[in-house]
Image 1 (cartoon, rainbow, N blue to C red):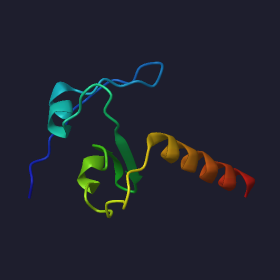
Image 2: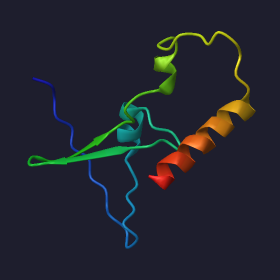
Image 3: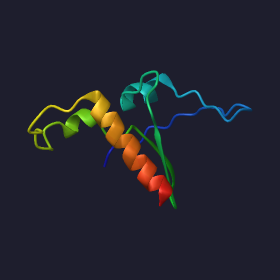
Length: 86
């Protein structure tokens, strides 16, 4: 069974909490990191982000021809418009 570590922090009037340095270090958090709060019957768990998008590299086939940023932006705009129209 793994050892349990307990840390304390105070919630400010704005609902902000400063994470102890040991917690930040263990979770690999740096400025701008995103945190996940998981609530369940046992309480709340503070977790690092779900994963790095770079781990998805190579999962999709390489396109037959290069796609420009402009083409990608146009396709995204078109799909968003289609979704908004229902």
